[in-house]
Image 1 (cartoon, rainbow, N blue to C red):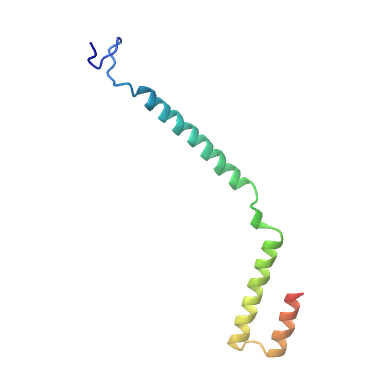
Image 2 (image 1 turned 90 degrees about the vertical axis):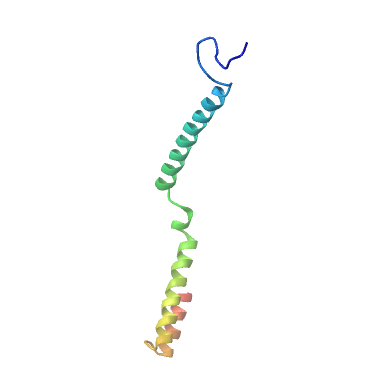
Length: 88
């Protein structure tokens, strides 16, 4: 006769293995997440150096130069000279 008690007096409906698996999976996911977080902060990202960063800096410099010219802070000749220097 099955009255939801096993031979040791534990109450359950057979989902104990599922709960154990769920706890184990959460522990593994936590460890993997911790490892990923540590490795991301310790290794340099690809966008932190190289041609992409240099291009971003050049674009920012051109934007600042364009803003100064638009405000009238610099003359046309100075704008062209600095723009050609940035494009080199």
